Image (cartoon, rainbow, N blue to C red):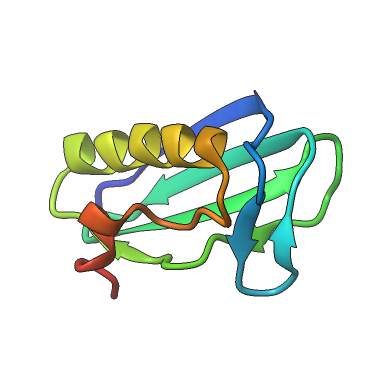
Amino acid sequence: MAWASWTTTGIYPGAGGVRTEEAGVISGNLTLHTTWTGAAAQVAVQYSGSSDWFTLAGSPVECDSEQDSRDLHQAVVEALRNGGGAGVPAEWAGHAV
């Protein structure tokens, strides 16, 4: 089975923070991690330096290729920086598993 993962640290969300399944809206210095398992990508965030991960609202997302999952990760980085209670961007939300 194919898999890949990406991590981006030091993301400061815009006003309104980001939406998670477990903790609601969070903000501050965040780390984003995306794991692709060959068919879907799991997207999670944490307060940088913390050990607790929270599922980003809209995750997991169906991704047929490693490149798609990388593109998803970058789209989520940009959405988080915009804030506004961001979750998985709308263009990817239709692929929710």
